[in-house]
Image 1: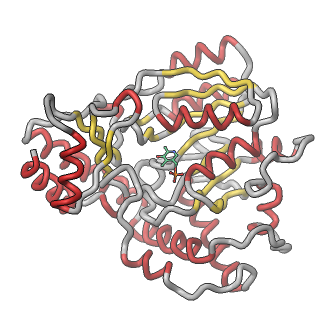
Image 2: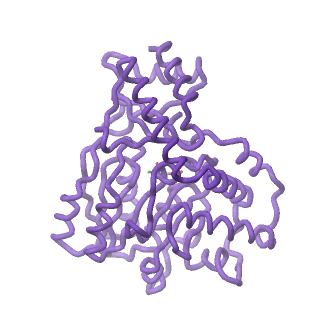
Image 3: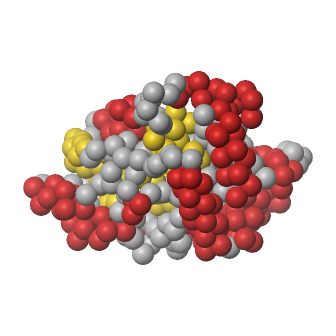
Length: 356
Ligand SMILES: *Cc1c(COP(=O)(O)O)cnc(C)c1O
């Protein structure tokens, strides 16, 4: 019940344990094609370039930036937590001319501030995190998308924690590059990073005059393995992780996206109500709260690290600590994917009452 990895279901574990076949086996290619199709459904996009990158969520972040940033590109990065800060680090390493607009941790990115920044200068890329896992804040990705579209920049969104737990509408929200991870609301072990690029993003990639400065994450090469008739070897696909994600996406679609979002919202509402009964409150204002990541204020005068280690030692429950300016001030309780159930909330509340 921490900020990830989330609990993995038995069906996904069973998929992981199936025999490892070749990465060019026609049966494996069928699995890849279905997985791409299902990822498109879940990202709600028609984008052809939609696939899982080999690596964790951070590899998805790196893939989006490394393929789309040319040295000197003006990039606006909206930061209100650890993962926005990481985006700025990644963009800076690629020689981007990055502008970082910061917002208080625990509060959302302000749409008016984005409008203000875009009025000042022309940006090539605007980047934001949808679900800031370090604080439990949901950023207004849809509203920002409208402004970015008028401005003409490419819109890059981190959907690592949001995908599967709250709605993500890549095409409707004018998102050009998106990445996620398997280990949050997709309830799969860490190891793959689903990404999708719009036709505008693909145009920018194809128009590059210099090579993508990272061979492993170069989508112009990886595409030739995941698409079309060539199926050219690039690197050996992590076969069993591809099975696991196949099963996780299958399970999510079998439940239904709307039902999954409702289950997350319901588990979150139940957690908040139960926490309030024992006098605990949340950091984030109700309208910006994420259902899958709950930032709970630690009560005054308590050794928060001791509470976490007792939860783990005595009750086998893991919750997360606060990071950066929120270290020592909050606990982070994950209700991601398979974890988002009343029975888990009940176990946590019983254990918290005991250790507190
Ligand atoms: C977890 C997370 C990442 C990084 O994913 P890893 O799997 O740890 O590499 C990136 N962005 C957000 C919002 C996350 O929650």
